[in-house]
Image (cartoon, rainbow, N blue to C red; front, side, top):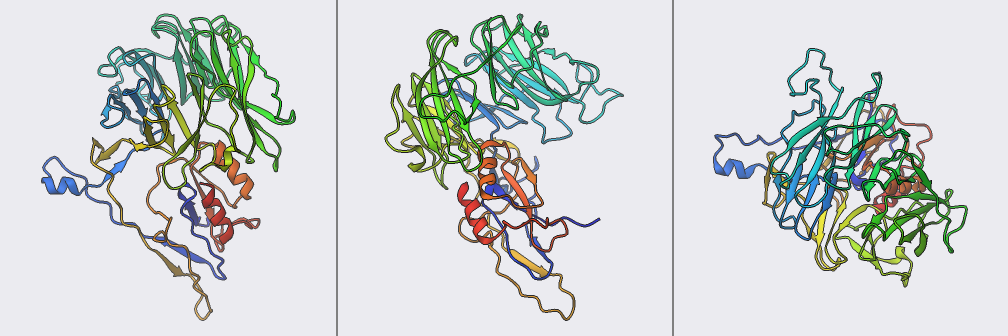
Amino acid sequence: MSKRLPVYLFGLCTVLCATLSEAQTVVLQRHAPKRAASPSSRPHEITAVPVVAIPIRSFKLLSPTTGWASTGDRLLWTTDNGQHWKDISPSTPSLADTSVDRFSGTFFLNTQDGWTLYLTEAANKDHTPNPDWRPGIYHTYLAATVDGGTTWTTVSELPRPTPWQEVTGGGTLAFSDDLHGWVDLGVSGGGVLFATSDGGRTWRRPKGDPEVGVDILALTESTVFFAGGPDHSLFVSDDAADTVQEVSLTNPPGIPHDLFPLYSLPVFMNEHSGYEVVNYRGPLGSKSAAALFATRDGGHTWNPDRVLSNLDEGSRVESTVTEGTWIIPLASRGGQPSLVRLHPKEQPAAPVDEHSGKPGGCRPSFVNPDEGWLSCQGILFSTADSGTTWTVITPRARNGVLTDDPVTHEERVPVQMKSNSRPGSVSARPKLASPADEGMQSGISEHLGFDSTEALPLSAMQIWWNSSPYYDVAIYLPGSPNRSSRHTYATADWVTAVSAQG
């Protein structure tokens, strides 16, 4: 079996690319891992252990000072706007596969009352081992807190939909009050919806058994919105999800009718007033667009309010609305992010793409037009002045223990070439871009990634960067046995252009 020779683009930043006449092996040398601090370590030995940032997978700002963040394996809490974090994870068994999102869904109704879904591979309800245990066969439990995560109570195990469907790890949930809630449970073949009217102690399948999206907004105990799925659709129910209707909005003026709508979950100010952001995509080579719709009757009717047209191909607006202000984050270019803020009926004075960044790449959570958080590729930012200034509040840990110390600067690692040329042959040694060069980084990535035998066109790479959950991509150097014969894009210009995308 031939050995793969992948080169990873960490965050589309670090690229090694060259045209080789003979097969070459690229060796990335890493420093030997530092010894973890033991209980008997001396103070200077403990401080020598590096401090690392913990990438954030999901988060929510609940008040100007209080919010939560999930790393997938840990649930964290702050009451001082990210200056300090504490671990509020329910006590659960760890998973054999650490890449699985152990806390697959979290929802807080306020700063005290919350719920989280957690996975375990133990088949017994008391979390004790079971003789029939198999790795990767998950059980989903619901835990609840009434004191901001200080204590948790395991309320119930989510029922398994059918004997042949296995829980795959995903899950989202939302509650309208302390009793009525809904869970979209990830199972093999898709998702299954459950509803509760007793705070999660018991669950039922809605009568219509609707196959809906993955994101849930519980407006009242009977009115529920669902968004997502493979078609990015929007559904609404007025009877607690026993029946659902698909929401279809006409493209507003300024957005061509041949552009395809991608719906997101609406944002409501109260039971009656809310907003819905719709992104629009077209065929390759066409511009994208986004529109904000408003409702004043709980979502029964929607009217176009603001439009962003002529966006770059593949652009997708990740935004939020608070107090009528449409807040659109722009991806940072090696520094802090920025915002576009549009008030009701206001249109941007210039195309959004002419600002200091492009829409997409950062997810927002704002409690008012001035105060909010952004997560950009796992880095968490906070602002209290409408985005004029930003503070990095990403949780940090030393040897797995949360700390307030700054992240340890890591020495960049040089790249060496080792020739595999046959004796007597002439082999040129090309100059490769080194991680020590400006703008390059090396290290271990904990982001999601995928492996491709060929480099994709720039337009496809931009769509993937804007729209998928993946952050890293592996391509193959010329001379690798796994390299595709169609691998025609990985040139120096391609590397430069892809790095500039983000």
